[in-house]
Length: 276
Image (cartoon, rainbow, N blue to C red; front, side, top):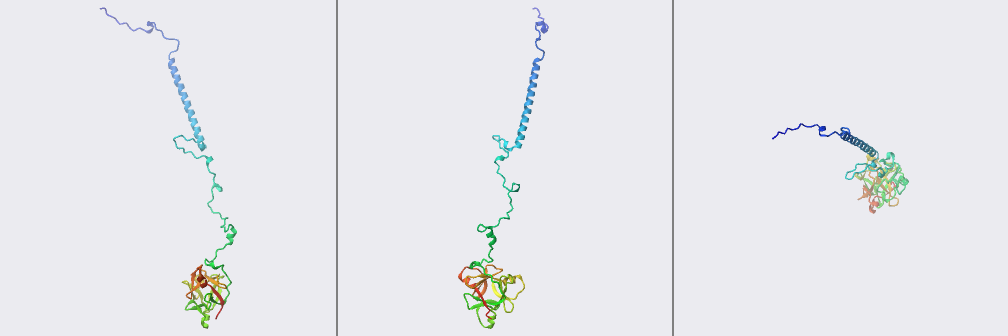
């Protein structure tokens, strides 16, 4: 059997093949590289444009809160629209003043002048009528009861009681020097023959010497008020407004006002000429 000897490899041109000379070598690779570079450039340009657009949108949104859009499904933290905001109250700095007005005065019956002219009564016990304030004079007087016309104020045992007239000594103890009030010149104070004064203590009327204290002057001052009984007055305490002198069991005491016929009679007295 004859031996087959392998043939050596032949070059391409030996097989009748010839390279294509119609295009330059590496053209396909160049096209691929060029397309890739172009795509890269386009991508970069688009990215820059998107970034600029986003920056412009954020800038506009920060300048105009009303232009912020709410993305569905997300909570919007944008400020409320200025168009829907309520106008601030009038006043300086757009704030309402918390300082109370000093020009407004309390009105009574719809008129400020009525409030200025209306003055509160000095006493809550002025139910019987308007207070009568005759000017007290330093004259000797006796104080007669309205519902017991035969009985007078009478100093007995250091207290003032409502007693009938007796002898000359009893008449002297039933006569007092009515002077201007020690605590209020428009009111009354009652001095005795021996220089003491009538004052209330523990709401009982008694005679005591003046100790020079403000308390004594107030306790010894009584203001005349109009009475429901003709020609009579009610005597109100200066330091206990609403309490009036009245007799009870023929004892003179300071009692709160009562709107009863008995109280109005017990607290009504007439200042008559001295019986001494």
